[in-house]
Amino acid sequence: MGRLIVISNRVSPPGDEHGASVGGLAMALSAALREHNGVWFGWSGRTTETFTGHLSFQRGGGVTVATVDLEEQDRQEYYNGYANRTLWPLLHYRIDLSAYERSFDEGYSRVNARFADTVLPLLEPDDFIWVHDYHLIPLGRELRRRGVGARIGFFLHIPWPPRRLFTTLPNHAELVQALFDYDLVGFQTQDALSAFQEYVTFEAGGTIGPDGEVTAFGRTIRLGAFPIGLDTEAFVAAAEGEAAHAWRQRMETSLAGRRMIVGVDRLDYSKGLEERFLAYEEFLTRTPEAHEQVFLLQIATPSRDEVPAYQEIRARLDGVSGRINGAFATADWVPIRYVNRSYRRDELAGIYRAAAIGLVTPLRDGMNLVAKEYVAAQDPADPGVLILSQFAGAAEQMTEALIVNPFSREDMSDAIRRGLAMEKAERLRRWETLMDGVKRFDVTAWRDAFVGALLAAPLREA
Ligand code: GDG
Image (cartoon, rainbow, N blue to C red; front, side, top):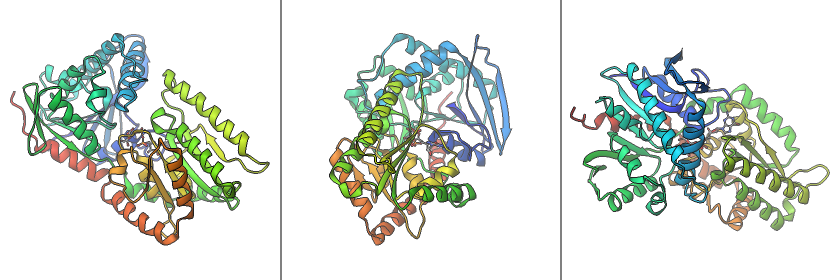
């Protein structure tokens, strides 16, 4: 079997899996690449005055990482523009936030062509290629144009919206057509897969075959749902390691007998943080006996802070958390500990373990790895309760969580009450089923399922 070439917008430096890198993709891929003799290619995150296509290599832990610098205009039009102001909101159903500007289109096409030009000399005939996420949808087409006949798969980490929303994108057909230059297109959930199939059937006049193949634009490709998981073994080990233990103790001291609800998210409007704070406020209003007995620790690591919608949500969260704290706090109790910094993964594991409830309530999420991490970090003898949004991809698998509607404050407030009151026997029963899933559907199962399906796809004719 040839080498696996992974291509994504950003890469994480080799050996950094316990470090402070933020983002589910980085965490999942470092585990996936370790076993294959892989090369991982992406943007360095840096810009230079003029694009040179010069590759920088780093090696470590059986993985070669290759990066390229982009231009400042690329960062603005491709990364902050098309990827994070057009596609991210649109694919999270937020057409109200989605910006459609031609300069973004141009930047997106330019960077995808640059990626193809840069990676081309690295490719060997036996390689197979796995492209990740919404930043790089047209990359398969660019590689084909340069004569690449290898198998190329694409995995979308975020949702695919209903077609009535997707068709608000100018050039939507062109973007979907570009996906037909891959051999396999993978989604996180059945829900996303169905939405894509519906687009293909009703907008592109395509047909769906019995074995996951789909034909449109004169091509037949494979589709599938491949729910991503954790490197569960490593995460459990981290949860039992020294740093996690130290953080758990530190948190327990700081609890002073109170119970903690924890949220951990990138600071992103898709994560439903404002709705979460308001639901928690509803809970406080309706549950006076919980005052001074419970607090919410919300870790929200700033993200994409050059994009206006992220600056706005950050300002709103500052306001809402401050208002709630002002209204409810006492001299020695703050109801919301709102923290805009990041922690190491092993420290996070200790924090999760000290929490009676993991509150994971995105308005829309491809999968959501925090839900799985919270479960993996629990004490098997006395686990906490996971409250999970019905709109996280993870809800398709994690049905033993307390499933909530993040648009309903009352629903979330009830779930917090129920979670805090839940008897140990029920907590154990739910956790065991959840943990079984987190172990079985881990990142290795995900990688094997995707790679297996990609290698089983017929090689296209030259
Ligand atoms: C995208 C999709 C999909 C957060 N704060 C810190 C920290 N994190 C880590 C978490 C978790 C990761 O970031 C976040 O992953 P999610 O899956 O929750 O969300 P996205 O970043 O939006 O990821 C998502 C994922 O891709 C994978 O396919 O599940 O739906 O949106 O691992 O722990 N990590 C550290 N310090 C922090 O403060 N070290």
